Length: 222
Image 1: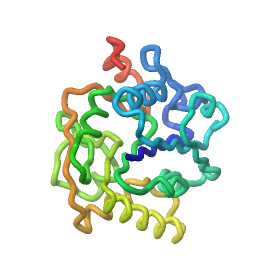
Image 2: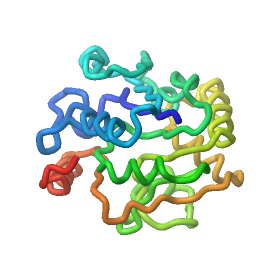
Image 3: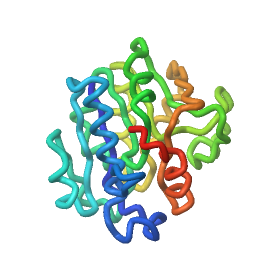
């Protein structure tokens, strides 16, 4: 299994809490988002091949990572679809794709890894959906907030790789990578959900998100 973690962006909406530092190095109750992610993979399955896509202040982040690193040198003028395109060599077989600003418990990663082979999107059914990509297309097959993580099997991964290639080469590199994923869903890609309702997680986009994450992880859970 592969895992691609996208963390090339500047995180401009969270500058009030990051003070210009990489968002993945933001501490949530004493542990950075990146540290939690690395610890979770080590606990669940250290054999998973991990690729981290960096851009903004990559040199600062590199020293914390011993896994594969890919650089998106155009992070200031592109979006996450370009970052995933740069990591396209890792889009093969069973693959987890996640945004690098998601702070999540080890239990969530267990749920993702332990599923039988298939295509899955991680959803919290207790939270309202506020994702601009999925909301704008009226997806109604599930209810809840998309947690910034999905997992594809070999077929789904190959389809996603082709879709990303087509979009980037047609100069649509300002899109979220989820736009390509959504196209596959609309084309009939078999998809199941992993419901993480009640588990500890937070995606950090704003100062409010950071404050909420501090409350969620107050007990120091990894």
